[in-house]
Length: 356
Image 1 (cartoon, rainbow, N blue to C red):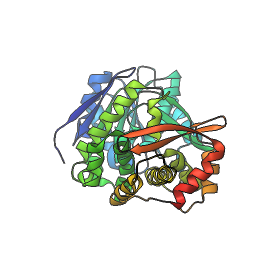
Image 2: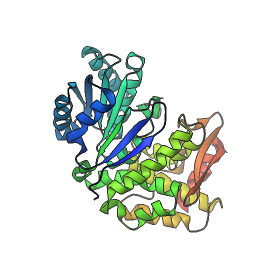
Image 3: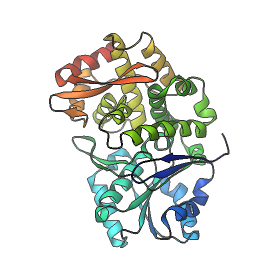
Image 4: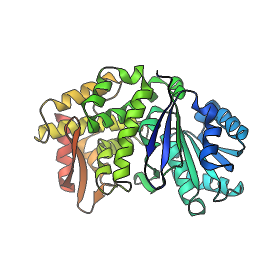
């Protein structure tokens, strides 16, 4: 793993910088002081991450002059809901955080989504920063300002666009990840490779993700930053980042969120790639190449759920608009397209992806 610290600017409103490298949690306080100035900081983490990293982050923030409080919630997607959000908001209020203070989202995608959403709505918006500790959060969810919680009807149906003030990614955190959690992040990285270009996708085919995750994270973040800068509120191009997510979210919902996000997205990516090839929408052999890459990175390429169950679950997806739903279709590596299809066509498309 490279020991250098890379910084990637994200030119949104407001602008911020993503810092990537080893040992950054120990220096996060000084780095954040330069961005935020001295203030009160509320560290939000789940019950898995808090024991591992909250003491380091709290000590660094305190040493840099922040007044620190912390909140821990139960780990897991099942707790990414309005009830947990309410508890976080009540905590911020009890701690008397003001608009000049900040929330520190420490952890994976669930913590980042919920802490970010809490910051977006508390006092109609206060500052927050992302300290991703998983590969999935590092390559994807910590960047771009999407915050949300799940509703009973579906995933991420209540949320807000709210850009962080900074993102600090300590690559040493990846060393503590179990293989299946690391693979969960690999799914979003592979997805980015399919969207981006042959050079990035090849890194997932040749094992570079494991050998030098810092470099891969930087390249994925740089790609996503460009997309977000051009389409911050997901009116067009940014929708491409949902590649694999329509079926992926349906798999998550069908499993009661037992199947983790990355594994579900990997299966969803494989399904849409096979469906696109079966329907003549993509170049021949692309599906085989994508599924081989997913398998190489320890990810599933299918699901036991029926096409009927997945189609029904997908009908609540936020990408649906009236009688249509927008699918992200891979045409070749580095070129995907948005294809609006009637809701009635979703079942046969999913079936084609399962049966191919």
